[in-house]
Amino acid sequence: MNRKRLPFSCFLIAILVALCSLSTAIVLLAFGSLQTEVERTFGEPHPSLGYTQKLWFQALLYAHKEQLTTPLNPYAPPQSFAISSNEPTPTILIRLAQDGLISDPQAMQVLLQYLGYDTQIQTGEHYLSPAMSPYQIAQALVDPSNLLIQFDLLAGWRIEEVASALEASGLRFSAPEFVAAANQPLANFLPYPRYSPIQGLQGFLLPASYRIQKTASVDDLLRQFTQNFDTTVSVEIEQKLQQQGLSLYEGIILASIVQRESVLEEEMPLIASVFLNRWRAQMKLDSDATVQFALGFNQDQNTWWTNPLKSADFSIDSPYNTYLYTGLPPTPICNPGLAAILAVAEAPQSDYFYFRTACDGSGRHVFAKTYAEHLDNACP
Image (cartoon, one colour):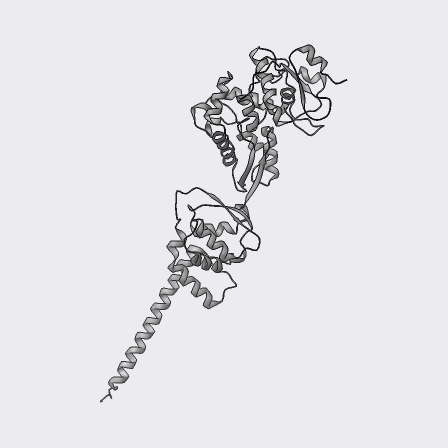
């Protein structure tokens, strides 16, 4: 039986149709792999995206995948990046590029829109780094826990007070955890010879205004506080303390007493001179602040610093009671500010051995060379 042959043109059309079908299948198969790869790398697209928009974004993200997942500088330190209220996303992205945090604002814009992050960026001060990939930066921008908070570590606070203030700031650890960690040797955070004999961090959490992450660990914060001390309290200051006859640790102990005994910063140097004179003469320091430290937390007054002190308080048997024991207490009694440390390091020469609060309510002190003068300065 004879079969009719198809015209050659029909044969070509059939071949072309077959090839087109095969090409479409290959394209669809390839695009399916592309979608899978994009979703594995960046996650699912935001539900608000239309089908065509989703496919378009996925194609762009695939093309920029390496750029969006690679940090600009793996060794760069973190930096602060502030975002103001109602700031347009394109402006934010341009500033990120200007600050060297990302390289392509347009690719970043696609990523934010794909994930739905463009409407979720958190206002405030962020903690970012070129060592983060643009994808990690995108995640950080919408994470409230990545925002920096301001923490004011006040001069004169003892470690327990620092711990309570940090806990109240909403950080992810308790006050007891912070206090326990602060009992570590200082060399764990500042591994330098001048700190090697110092046990515990009391006195070395430098008072200042800090920007800290809500996700910071206890050790992160202790490292931040102590490194600020190391940067601020220079070797030159230590040398000045040595010229006063004090080691660095002795200088910080005395500065902590000066901090608690002073109301006005301008009086700190003269108060420091009184304590130095008494210490050199091997007299007891007779500091009320050391008695307050020895007493610990006062439940009735809800404070670590009992005031006023009662007569019986001065009899507490503690190495911190400088009314009973000659010399410096074993450790600092608080974290002194730079002004108190400099007051000790640069204390002027004086003939004063006594001081007491003035009677006018100004917070000032009156100074005396002799005990008889000191008694005469008492309030009527």
